[in-house]
Image 1 (tube, protein in one colour):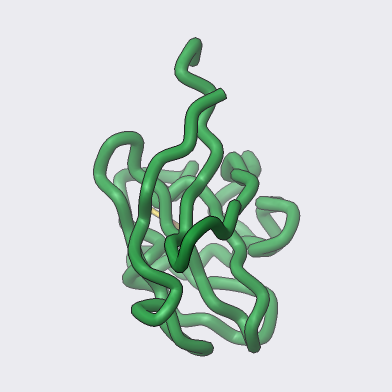
Image 2: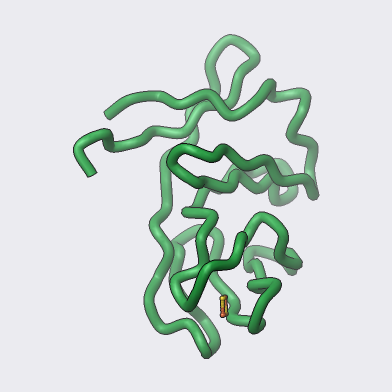
Length: 103
Ligand code: FES
């Protein structure tokens, strides 16, 4: 496991999202809780960080599948496979995600 820096804690206010490219991961601030999922929809190639957040879910901007930000579960079609979730670590004013480099 390795820590990948996302941004400063101050750059991720409630209601905001930050994305890293490699691997593509989106970190959402949902009312103070930082939740990280794979940024790529499991239905096709769309960036979930560009989706609409509603409560604990995000809606894919391309075809509207909804994913649970806590579990990655695909809640509505057309997506059926969950997105991967990642642990978020706060350290020295920075937000990190825990990435398994062996994948
Ligand atoms: S690409 Fe996300 S629902 Fe189709």
